[in-house]
Amino acid sequence: MSAEAEDDRPTSLTFTRALTLEPATPPRFDVAFRATTQPCPWPKAYGGDLVAQAAAAAMRTVDDGKVLHSMHSYFMRPADIGVPLRYEVELLRDGRGYSTRHVRAYQEDKPVYVCLANFAAGEPGGRIAAAAPMDLPHPEDLPSSEAYLADREGGAMTPEAKRYWSRGRSFDMRHAPGPVYLTVDGARTAHQAVWIRPFDPLRPVPGLTDAQLHTAALAYVCDYTILEPILRALGLAWAQPGLVTASLDHAMWFHRPARLDGWVLYAQEAVAADRGRGVAIGRFFDADGVHLATVAQEGMIRQPPESIDVPGGLAPVAG
Image (cartoon, rainbow, N blue to C red; front, top):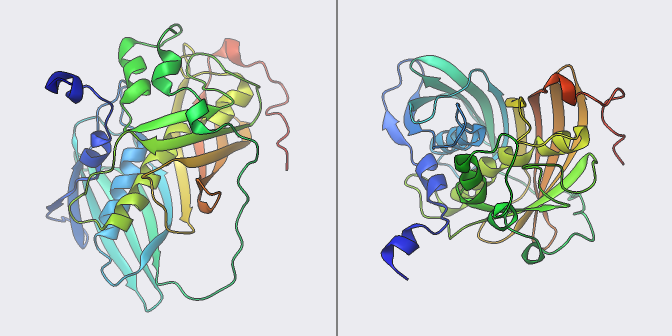
């Protein structure tokens, strides 16, 4: 294989670049880092960049063995692509069992993102976990985004968007029942599942342990598809002309150690949509069905008027 062909292979390097933080001087709070959002074919940056960068910034200030167990975030302004962000971390509390960090992201000195991150030492206790969905196709039996989009076009999809969906997000994503890139492929229900793994092994990131790297990877990928079950239930696709979406607020709980060096399953459901907003819940499972993390997110779903054809809102969600 030529060097040119090798350089064109899908890679997880975009994720590595996003997670690479440089120490900075904090104008307001205790610790600061500088990061840059990664290229994407939309006017503004991908929200998972901010979530994962904030997680990395917070984790780099906790050195007593506690692990990140929850994040609660608000996206305050759209972030410009390629413009440096400064993450300032306030060390709110360091206790014996828990530590809390307040992270604020600034771009050109305007706050664009804020979150609270909590860390736990862990202790013995009872154990319950959600069950993974049954009877899903194996990821190797599903098309990659690149294979699915190879001969498809239409709507508002540009060549840049097609390449980004295919190989620009660092992770291979395979949908069941099918993607919602150009049309709603599969049933118009409030449920879907996405198999996810990096295109190649995750590279080390300075300042993060291997375990922290994989935690940050889970935070990074969680935002790509979490609004899709809402789009699916409403009969909308990403390439629908006039559709505008944005992440508004976000919560994530890390239940167990996670690794993204193989397939993980992201099972998602829409729970509400009205007045231009929608809420979805997602659960991550490893290949053995172990429940790793839970996500809840509200997003703006700004539809073109001609697409609003569901008077009763979302179809009922099965319990």
